[in-house]
Length: 379
Image 1 (spheres, rainbow, N blue to C red):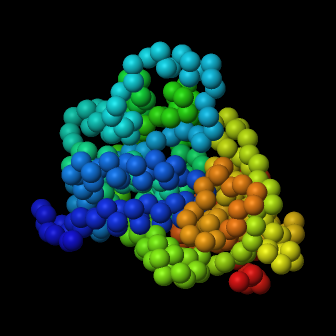
Image 2: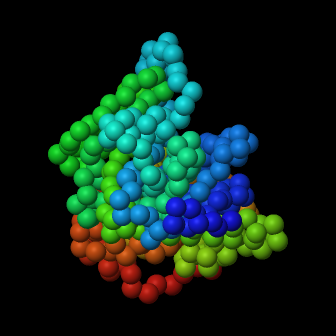
């Protein structure tokens, strides 16, 4: 349902639309971007309590608005037992940590936020949804990544030289930090990652406070509505007994790399990141691909030949349901489809590739352009 409020358009999402959006965001989340089940629980809790999510198009954001990105930072890897033994002795706060961080940032500015924007695609959008609903403000139909990314520095805000500070950090134990200034996004990543690890691998963050005018010049538009379309395609295809992977491909202008069975999958915790490999063999045994991830899928190789690399989006879907399989949930024996989707154009710029391109994983920047040449695909 669309309505005009205060001179701008709002769309109030039904619970089904919100859930479709979450599934689609996880498809475009390339294996990372947060926990899908936790995201679904957040949405269900919101709608059960009578709250609703309101979506506003990017071009409807008012120039004078104050907008920020609330989310959680952490790792899917379990925290160390010794640390949790200490943290479990502390009283916990029930409110979502991203909401706590957003409220702290509002207090720092001495004014309310007018809207929030998800920091990336993936289940992390649920934290932005909840923060928007709890604060009674809209969620922007855009994000500063167009995918999920492993590092705070991997944001289009960084491409356009928009400061991450001031930003707020909060955890479940009542610790709240306001970082008034920081040298760069890499330093912000180090600070946030350290805070999250010391908080049991989970902390709330609210950063990149910007005006509506700045926002419209620095993020990827319509990514949430695009996610909703992908999630709806996944759901309706399964309900009709059709191939979800193929309809999701069509919805996102993607490519199907392989249908097959996972032969092996392994991962490890590397200083707050999860890194691992997934190996997949086609059902006829004639094709094999391997994926390497650092939180999100970074590369695809076919028979040891590189065929896809960041910033291109690489996703693994359950072959039957079309649901995204997130890292590190891939297991041997699963029947899956591997898809790729085009990178947002802003990441294909010279600065975009310097921030989040092949160099990030130790390869030459022109590796990406070379791989954009036409290639044979398995359908």
